[in-house]
Amino acid sequence: MTEFTPFSALLGGALIGVATVALMAIHGRIAGINGIVSGLFAMPTSPDWGWRAAFIAGMIASPIAMMWVTGSMPAIEVPVEPLLLAIGGFLVGIGASLGSGCTSGHGVCGISRLSARSIVATVTFMATGLVTVFVMRHVIGG
Amino acid sequence: MFRILTAFGIGLVFGTGIMISGMANPAKVLNFFDIAGTWDPSLAFVMGGALLVTAIGYRLVFRMPHPVLANGFSLPTRKDIDLRLVGGSAVFGIGWGFSGFCPGGLVPALGLGRFEPFIAAAAILAGMAAYKLATQLTQPKQPIANSSAT
Image (cartoon, rainbow over all chains, first blue to last red):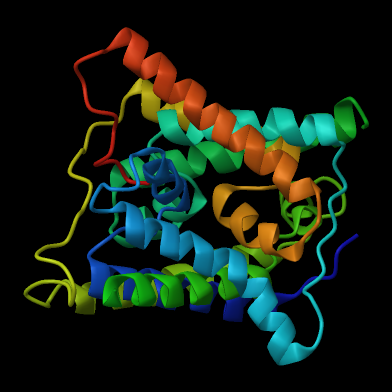
């Protein structure tokens, strides 16, 4: 069980929105995390490498900044075996590259622009995520 | 230099939003998907909050002649719905359902100093690398989807 947290969810979502809008207003870029990370495979001398690396560094620094402010690290719980984390991660990396986007790129940026591709992508990955968890927890019973 | 600083600051806000929202917590993500079991609908509110702010914010931003630190807005131009989009997204969802980490949720989780996010991150990078390798082997002359919606 995890606690239903509508207010922190809404607040966190709004902050994600603020950052997404700011990246477009200041840098003119879509805040798709898979795409930004994927761009880091290019040479560090390429023109977009710097801001991409800085953006990712800022994201990684965020829980540390939160600890300075609140005095404790945010807690997470990972109820997944390392092997399944690795298989899942690999599929996420391939799938998001093949499908041109992830939760942030399609789910937030794309849907906000009413992109038909992003709406189809988001409905698809939500549906297969749902089915996967159903099979893992209720069919296989893992 | 200013581009680097603003990008870092925006990443910091994005990551903080992810952490507060619960998207970096696989237990919450997997419970969001588990409608038939221990369902936790919180993440629908994350999506709602993010979409509300972004949909309104983007409309205002696109009235600007150009972004503050760039000559133009870089937006995906493709409109076609093809097998790669649907198939890739389907695979993405299966992986997300296994691990509970999407790329946006995973990156700030790396800052927590736990080992699990690093396993998922290494695997995601391996998946991306495998895709890039396969693309280069099969289509040597084509640029790699860098104008995509990601």
